[in-house]
Image 1 (cartoon, rainbow, N blue to C red):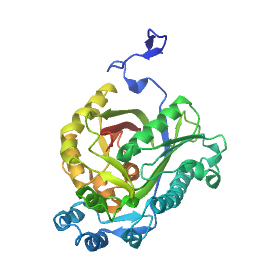
Image 2 (image 1 turned 30 degrees about the vertical axis):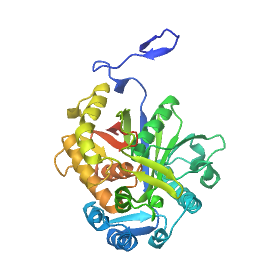
Image 3 (image 1 turned 180 degrees about the horizontal axis):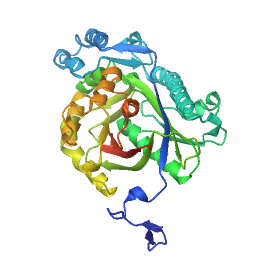
Image 4 (image 1 turned 180 degrees about the vertical axis):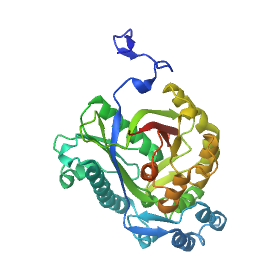
Length: 378
């Protein structure tokens, strides 16, 4: 191993350099399969706009000024776990939680089942499940609730992760890949499930709430990973390296307020200008740690938080205007589903043909950016 013993007798890994990059220092996890799922109720943006106007315009004087966000998001439709009429009634924690558990369990099972089918791996052959979800509270967590339904083993390692928000699609993939690399030959299932629409609040008359109403949808994505290929394996990509960057004094940018009626969305600062100014240096810093430069990246795969965020990321990462075309298409068809969204983009890209090297990136509460470098399977 490369490193030295510290004063407490702990092994301290040596920092990588371009001559000794982190990309070469461990067996890499392979993404064997990738699948997505959405709930059955379709919310067309025109219908949501009309419903929101009827619910808010008489009670919130700023609504008409803010309502243009419904047409500038670039979203045509979204999917939700409840029909649009459900959101027109006041809801409390018990109703929201019941809807979350039903919807999240179903989406987990659908996305995970499709990913397992594509990989050719049986549920009983899964050794570890990493579940990312920040839009509801489930204890026992989701993978425990569907354990018998899915056919998972009783000695399954369960890793539920809460609080990553939109960054969870990349951060969760990073956690899953590291767990796969820690136990080569074992099968790791990663599932991201978010039901953002359940945070819709009739009583929350704020700009952030209106923006969330115009932006968020529900969905799930899943993939199977393994470090150490077996004969006959077909892989999508290899996870070369992963990393995160968290900016100080940014806790107010994005997150949840936990309130009597449910989660209250936090958008205390404008995200697009922050992304344009900060993401480029953070990503370049991670690339340098991995022994790479921006010129080594054929395609950035970005979480499409909104059209303005996409444009800001194109500028921050020096991408030709309009270059994040798959991101715009996913946003238009599904809205911002938080953590799963970037995996929808990855799925779209792999179907049209991944380039040799791509770097996934997503921003989330912290405020942070999560990144993962992927190499296309040979």
